[in-house]
Image 1 (cartoon, rainbow, N blue to C red):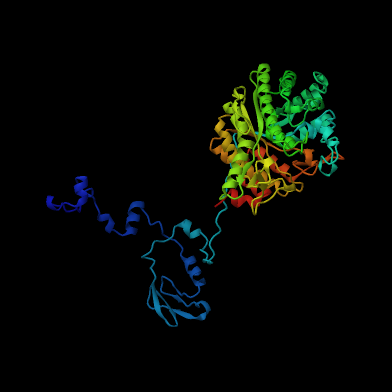
Image 2: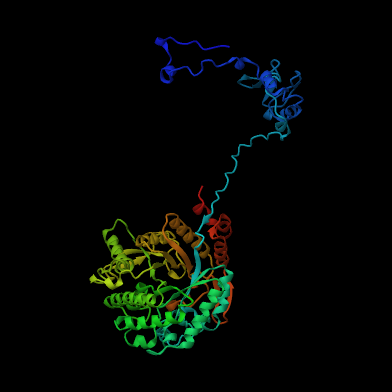
Length: 581
């Protein structure tokens, strides 16, 4: 047995000084000097390459241009070089020489059979290797599935006035009768005819696989005259809610969605503080009648939109343009929310109560402009943040108000986000009524139908990020797009849901998504010109036709995920963005 020489103490190698001994002392290295073949036979008891046929190697070699194969027996086969520009000759047994004009001969040794390991039986049966073509193999397409929580709520959102039809006791019905109030002279008419035939659309919602639906009750139907409550109207709503439950769909009921009884409007509407207790009384009657079928309540839809559109821009009733009145209305709506919250919990202690907050991302058109940044911050403070500060901090902040608002604190069990688009704001001294802000579109932005805004999916993530600071559950109570030909909606849905998936991965408490909307409906001052529905509606005939995005949404709901197959089927142009790589 060969052993390594032990070094003296003065010349011990470094590894011995570190380890304290030579790790290879006593190791038998004689086997390294033995022939590999002999070792294999000694270990295995036989030669594993015995009877291996190498004929396929010779046949393949004959196909290679520019070479000549010499068999192990010493036979040679002359082969043509590419283009005939060189020749191959055998210099000596076991060598291949390639000669080309002006190039020194290259001698390549050929290993003999006795010198080279032979292929195994499995390798011999493999097809002969193909020649390289010079083209890199195609990279595999990236694949990933974006899963949502198992208890995630998938729904659609609607509003009573927009779908029920013939809501003659509402201030909006009176508004429609005034010339020029509704685009192209449209009227709601039968709308989607839900008051008579809502169940047919509930069936369509169930067919899409939905497990949630947001709808509202119409105050002017339930209390057509002050203090007079219509039991038949409440029973019809109970019937609709039962129908949802029977189809496995959880209802979320909104108690005020833009529309008021005529008699209330005549008394000053939400400008008058007397409206707050009247609304609380109405809410109590509704919850007592319908609480058996619903415990998820949305008090008021978009207080900021209601105030700005009706009292600043004048496109909703009562058609005013008065900033002070708009701010007063916002304050009263928030007080109405707080009063409703307490009434609901008095009747139904386990109820979950929130409201739907419309948020728009408001960015400066020119980020380098101090004035543009200033108007963007001020507008955001009024439109997005002041409402949240009042409801969570119990404080009125300018310009919404000054001082304490303690009655508003702790009146949110959850918060709803209505998100559609963003606005770019520039300073304009002529726009005093809008705090000197002029809305514009960013250069190169993809625009939505009807000038509704720009395609900006990241905005929903930014809004959720802000709302997550409240530490309460978040529902996306509205998100959608006007798109009559459905050429943008599939991308819109996928891109926005992907942003929500991102938010959920960061543990933001997004509990559900309600797409706006199921069927084309009467879109307030825009009439029938903006088509938000997954299902197309002809208001004259009431005929319905699902758009491709209805199938898209159904596939997402059934998978509870966004899959590569869904992306490739409905919006392949999004693959590089959603599945980069």
